[in-house]
Image (tube, rainbow, N blue to C red; front, side):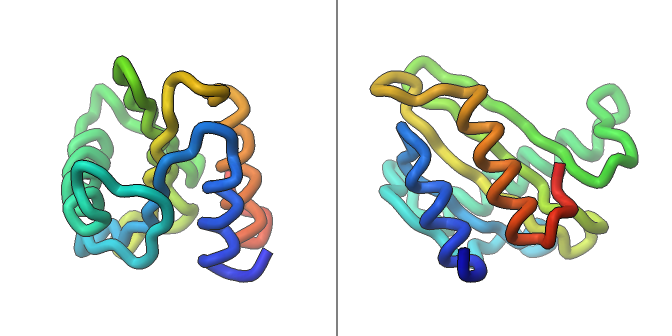
Amino acid sequence: MTGIDGCLDEIMAIPGARSVTLVDGASGLAIAAAGSHDPLDEHEDAAGTTDVVRAVLGCPALAVGDDGGAELIVSGATRFHLLNLVDGDYIGRLFVHAVFDAEGGSNLAFARFRVRAILAELTGGGHG
């Protein structure tokens, strides 16, 4: 894999993938994106998912601990969303938002496994 673009391409190769966005958690801005971002573009996607990540990380009842990595799963009727935080401090922390069709060959367990493996490769083996 070659850097960020290779990472996004590999995530898009997971069965059922619709889109993926690499987000700067400090600013809420999209750094890179691939796939079909509808009905929102990647910038609206990044801003909205940053609010979700901040809310979860700021809630003591939903604390993710000190293990460095965190994964959030949002499931809908037709899609599921994986939000994977890239290892490091949250100040300036990056995360990946990947969207998958809930039907059509996608598998939540396989998608989780592959996204974790791809991010581990991108970060030098330090991710979940």
